[in-house]
Length: 240
Image 1: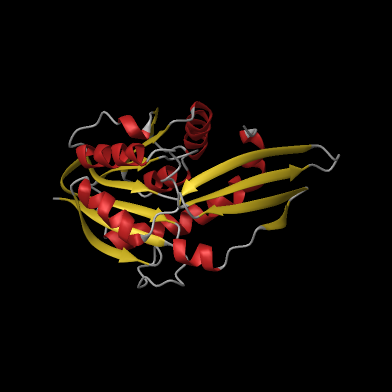
Image 2 (image 1 turned 30 degrees about the vertical axis):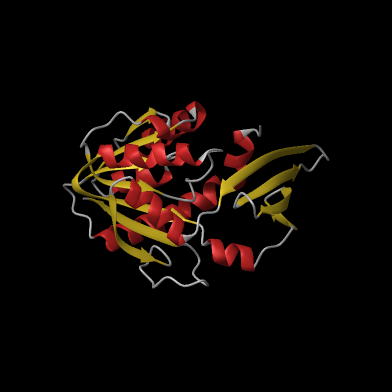
């Protein structure tokens, strides 16, 4: 398991800046009105939740990580915004008809080992939405990732270097990768990730099975048409 302080050191500044643009795109794409109540599902340290709250929306952010939620609360206090942050397992949501909008941003789906757990998460989304409420999922474009697949590469962030080693498990449809961080003094720290790389068709079936009706599929949060070259897959579904 990796030290999350390292992650914050590497990515928090750039990701928080990116979140400002992403939230602006989401508000525009969904034509959000100030009266809506929003759930930021798998919110991490709350960068999207905080930006939404700055715009006057009522926001609840949930994540399974106690450390991420604690950091989110500290950031919300620093920004002087009111967000309800809670430690919750996305597979066991306890809300019922509570939200107009649920967001699942920044590739926060498909990490569970069993597909049944992904289905449990989507069933919780359905239960948590108000009638006609909408769900936005921002996911990998599987086709693009596999077509441009690189087994390994090194990037440099601040005073650290990060080597990323990737493998695609075709039988399980999972992309597995390892991050190896090398510090200036030569120390190394590493962590592993594995995600089920669902196709658009598979995502559509999962959402519909949970009772969510597909409204649109885009290639980015800006609402561009989806293609195999799109930077991401953005699915918008509605509680039928």
